[in-house]
Length: 237
Image (cartoon, rainbow, N blue to C red; front, top):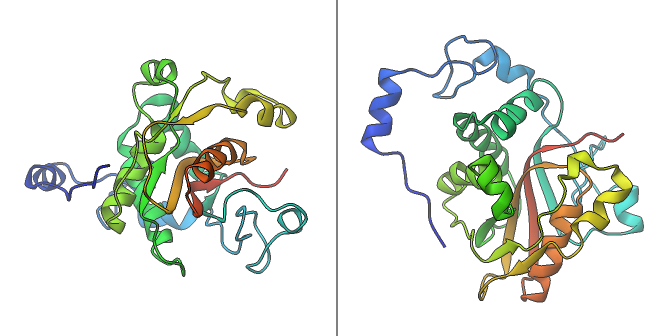
C-alpha cells in the first residue's frame, strides 16, 4: 500500500518556471491546471446520474436497468460524460503517452469526488493491466489517474493486491455482447486484503464488465463496500 506524497519543492519550482498551458487550446492554464477557464467550462460534466452505474438521469436515483438487475458494485461515481473535448484528453493520455494529463484529469475527478455524501473508502485499487500490456504501454493509466486523487483525498493506493492473470483483448475492440465473456476470470487476488471499503479506479466506465469481474474477486476477499470511480462515463448508446 502507498500513500501519495504532496508535491515537492522541485515540482513547485518547475511549475513556476513553466506555467501551465491549456492542453486543449494552448492558452494559459487556470488554477494551476493545464486547462484554461473557457475550455474547462466546455467539459461535459455528467450531472445527475444513477447511483449504481452512473448512467445519466434527469434526477439522481437508480436507473431502470439497475433496478431490474443491480450491478455487483455498490455505487459508481464518474465526473464527466465521455464526450468532446474530455474524450480527447483521455485518448491522449491512454494511447499517446501524455502522462501530464493524468494529473489534470485526476485532479478534476478528485474535485468531483470531494462532493460525495458517503464516507471515503479505505483505499483505491486501480484496474491492473496485464504485464504484457503494461510493457507495451509503459504505464497504467488507472494508476496514473489514481495518484492525484489519492493525494487530494488522503487515501492510500493498493495496487499490488489484485492482478490481471489473463491478457484479455482490449474491451474497446470488442462488440458489447462479447465484453463480459472476454473479462471472465481475468483477475485474481495476490496476498491478503484487510480493507472492507474500497474504490476501484479506472479511466472510463462503459459496460461495467471489467470492474464487475474485479468486484467479484474483492467480494470473495471479504470486501463489503465497493465503489467504482472513473474520470468519465460512456454515454448510453
